[in-house]
Amino acid sequence: MTGVMNYFFKLFLFSMLILSSSASIAENFPKPAELERDVNFWVRVYTEIDT
Figure 1 (cartoon, rainbow, N blue to C red):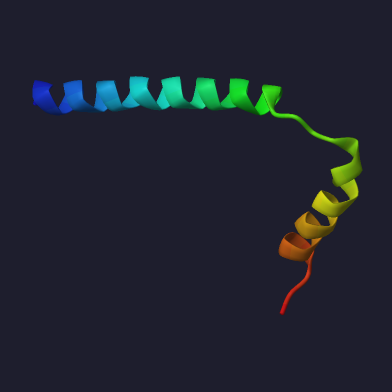
Figure 2 (tube, one colour):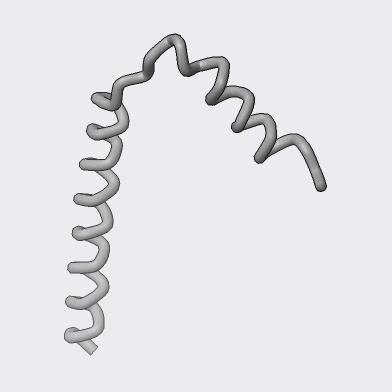
């Protein structure tokens, strides 16, 4: 049973590492103002408009 718990503990730690690093990357990703209108359009297309 301890082998299974050890596996899940390592999986949990790895997940936390990935989540914390991806949040840091998102903060540093450039967001050009001239693309905001286009991005908002595609967000609307994929979230609000049904086919």
